[in-house]
Image 1: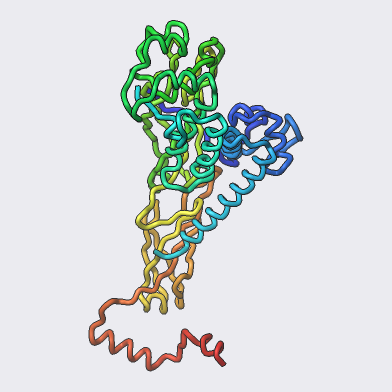
Image 2: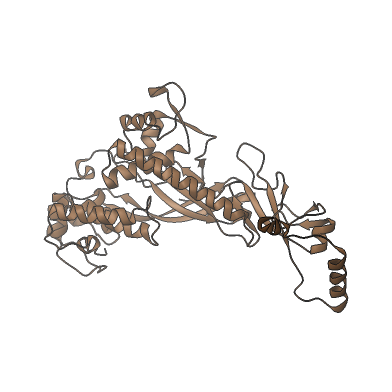
Length: 104
Length: 313
């Protein structure tokens, strides 16, 4: 089997629903809603089933599911872990940007 | 099938208690989990640890694993027919285990698995790191991926089969870009949906450009007189050479921006190319050049270290 396939970019330009995010991430709807309410996962639109998410959030939610499964974390622990990972990612991007500006 | 020593992977004795196994897993997971660890080889090591724990934490799976006996790590072996009958489901003893992956056997097919009960099993999602060149990110490219994924046979045994995927990557992928290929992961079983394939894109280091998002940085070496007097220089971009006007009095580290000459953006437009000025002095000078430098030094009142003197005043 070898045919060119559809490729979806997981960035802010594409939006997924709460239902889709549940299917794609492996998290339960209640867990996702708790992570949204804690601020660990950004959402827009009417609260609850009407929430929509930038497709880049799929990666965050999948990470949350891995952390939940691999460390047996509850949603409060997940929320802290996701916020810390986001800070690490922001700092890494800042370092990469500063390094890119430095001459070789 | 290659044997995996799950007890060795977790660093515990074969008679370890469930609590000892859980503690060993947690200690190793904190060290090697790919989402939190920067240790070299952490992802591969964590896969071994997680695979071992998934089996040993489940008493039924652990009993099935123990029934295979103790073997050297990586030894080729075939589960005996009585093991297949007891742990792998009715009819399994008739099938070859030669192309079955040890991890797949226990993660999806182990005792009590959905595949034995006939319920739908979704296909596994896969994440694959892919490195592409900056030129391919700029122009777009088609990736041909050859992967090995588990597919369930009629008896529900997951077998590794080759999986070839072609993916068209549109122009403008950046470092860290994630892409999703729906339904291109592992095959579902009994009506379960096929898994997805996720690509984690990284850009290969380039000999000229450094990237940050859609912007590109380029070192721009200038002769001292070009920096002092100004110059128009040709610089390379991903779409071909362009002329850049260097203003007179350009100091080292000054950034000269060429708008829209970076990587294309998904919603139109493009990042910038930023040329970072570097003043390069010739390594060797002949007598005339040296005389001209000395003439300039004598004529100029410029003091690049004036602020040092102000500090000590």
